[in-house]
Each structure stands twice: as C-alpha cells, then as structure tokens.
Image 1 (cartoon, rainbow, N blue to C red):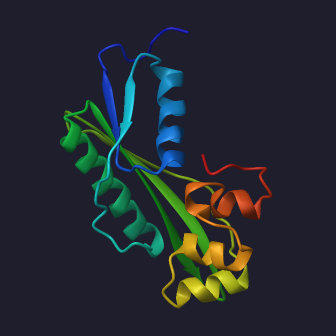
Image 2: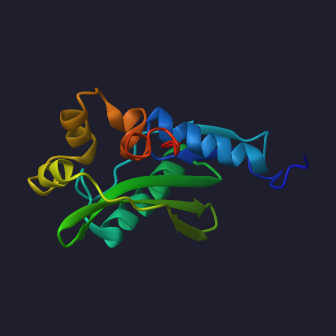
Length: 160
C-alpha cells in the first residue's frame, strides 16, 4: 500500500484510553503506516458525561485541538462519547474530530444505540455511561474495554 500522507509524522489523540488510541492508530496506519500515533490526556471542556450531539462534538473538537497543540503534532484526534435524550429512552452517541496543523477540521459520528432502561435511568440520574454499564452488567471498567456498544451488540461491534 502506498503511503497517502508522507508529510505527516505525528498524530496526537486527546485521550490515554487504550481503546481510543488503538482505534485512531488502526485507522491512521491504514492511510499512513509510518505515522507515530500517541495518546495524551486532553480536556474536553464539557461534562464527564456529555448530553446531546452538540455537547459531544464540542468535546471531541476540544480534545483534538488540545492534543495537537500539546504534542505539536501534525494532526490531533478527539474522540468523545455521549448520550442523547430520546424521550422515553436514552441513546448513545459518539463523535470524532480531527484537526490539522493548518486549521482544517473534520467531524464524523458513529452509530447510536438505545440503552437498557436501567442504564438510562442511572445516566439520567447523573452517572457516567461507563459507570452505569459497570453497575448494571457487574463488569469493571467497561469504558476502557468493550464499551456499551460491545456489550449491547454482544461483541458484534467493538468499541474500537
């Protein structure tokens, strides 16, 4: 495969979550196998549990910008998971932002899943989705492993 982006040397991911860093690395390496992809803690500027697409997108963009600047990277990637009020239910949402050194930005979203009623109740009560999934499933640290998507699809779709 030809390297599509030979001038890119470093991509910073605005997270130290191994699932998010691995997802960014797997995607970037399909386009540019030589690029170093490094995770770094980056503030989202939104609550730990973002509500709605707008807030979740703002968090992803903020993480991408902060990570790119912190490592003086060519590109920054921010990945933010949130929840959306869907009337009687709560649904997942996830957004990814990528920013370049010259200021270009791109944003993309992923699938949305309706959460089980008990998880929705806990999230509406103020609990972060990952902690709510831990409480309902009895698992530990869901958000850095299978994630809600992995559990709800029984592994058919991975968080990465």
